[in-house]
Length: 400
Image (cartoon, rainbow, N blue to C red; front, side, top):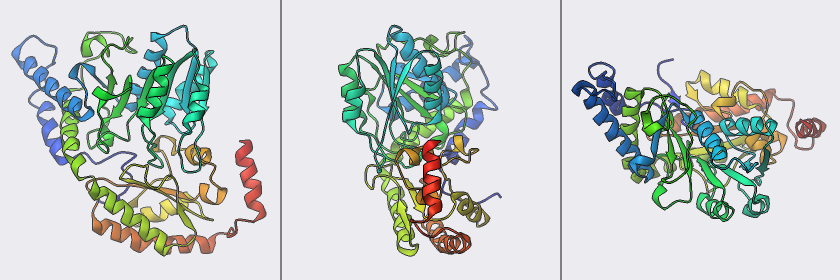
């Protein structure tokens, strides 16, 4: 398959052709080490400096606060470990039940090492209760790690209100903003956030490059020890071509923020078309407090994997959750945390758009999806919310 209708942009994005053209010279002509003293390497160093400025502009940060990493997972791991190292006497962490595995699995590992972790719940719309956060905070809380927006539902959390609570207790505030950069404006100069993670391949840059924002003055200890790169905060020779690409992608994303209504319009058109033509389906997550490109829709009585397979035959790419957990047959941990009924839980599909999505592509999805759902429901033995099987399966999921 060389061409498709790609509606899985929360998993990864197409590298912008302009970004590719920008990075290619650094794979061919300009291959010098940016740390070298000679002119050949020095010109690469200047390009790295410019890329750092472009990323800083996107985040509303200073260039000294930008550290290039390999990905969002490295950024999250580094941020969490740095927060613990900054206050080693504190042993309590607060996060949410709906975080990405790059945060949740680190927290589970830390529990085995003696840390106490509080996992905040969400309601049926995917929203946090800030009273629960306030009640969880103690003088022993070292870190609060909360995603800016959920990768499955697109639900946006009130980061600055959370940050105000965190600061009252002297804890470090880390935010996984992988899904947010380039979709909503960021202003780190006026933020309560100490550490923030982004990933290049979610904003039309290549895979294998990311950024960790470190607030000026934060007592940071690096995860990777070695050379002087990134001002001693992340050792290893820079991945120059991808770094240059991320800089250009950040510049383009900063410009495209003015035109996010394109994605919002197409997302709403897709969503409204599905709800109008397919019975027994509903949107998962809050209707307005979400990313402009994301909709997660639950189709009752059928399996999401079957929907995805049939969409794939039509050349349409979507998702049933995080790409980092797609190898699991378990229902989405995000939708489970929202307490959704089993009839919705297994039949939920995420559509995530980009600036490259077109009206014609939305037309095609709305043409082929209704008969797919009708076909699968005709084959399904389950067609009632009151069926005995539902109660049995719901209880089994709850026990698990």
